[in-house]
Image 1 (cartoon, rainbow, N blue to C red):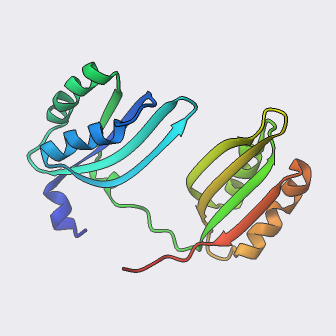
Image 2 (cartoon, helix red, strand yellow):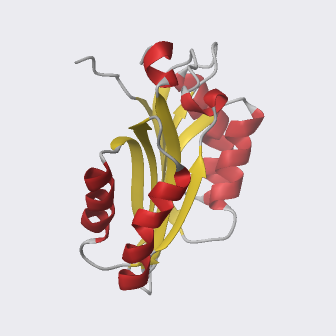
Length: 188
C-alpha cells in the first residue's frame, strides 16, 4: 500500500476473546462489514475452551476508535465477547521486511515443561524472528503428545540446514522430533 493511500486510512488492532461457540467470527466481521472496515490481517485460534482473534482493520478517515467501540458494545452485551481496541500509529502500520528465509519449524514430543521456552530461546539467541506460533496437546491422556508449530524468518546467513543443526541438541534433550523446512512464498 502506498504511503499516500495509508495516510487516508485509520488503522486499528481489534482483539476478541470469548468462550468458544459457533458464530464468533461471523458476528465480529458483520460489525466490521456494516461499518465499511477493511480486514487487512487476522489471526484466530482456539485456546482451551476460549476463542481468540486479533484483527488489523482499516477505515477511511475520518473514523474514530470511539465509533468502532460503540458498534462493538451491543455485540459485547449480547454475546459476552471481550473486545479490546487499539489505534495503530504510523510506525506500526507497515510490516517489517526481513531479508532472511521463511521456514516452518515443527516439534513433536512428550508433554513436558519448557518445550516452548527452550526452542524459542535457542531461536532468539540466533536472531531468528518468530512470526507465528501455535501449540496443541494431542494424543491420549495416557500418552499425550505436545505439538509446537512455528513460522520464522531466518536472519541473513542462517540456512535451513544450520537452523536444523542448532536445534539438534534440543531434539536429543527433549526426546522430540524437530523438523525445519523452507516455506516457499507464492506470488499472485
